[in-house]
Image (cartoon, rainbow, N blue to C red; front, side, top):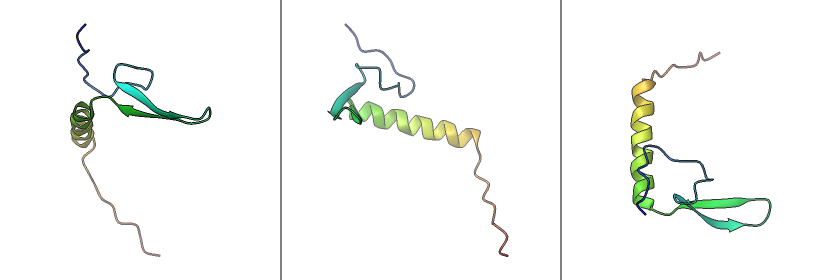
Length: 63
């Protein structure tokens, strides 16, 4: 069985990508199984976000 090819970070219901690290009944903490893949997907997402939303910094009026 081959690993699925991810193009974005999947929801935590994807047990192939995510691993349950901690759960106390109220809170669940998931960590990616492949940290390098997670890092690459985050960088890709940040680049796409920056391309869609050019940073325009507006100064607030000092009143």
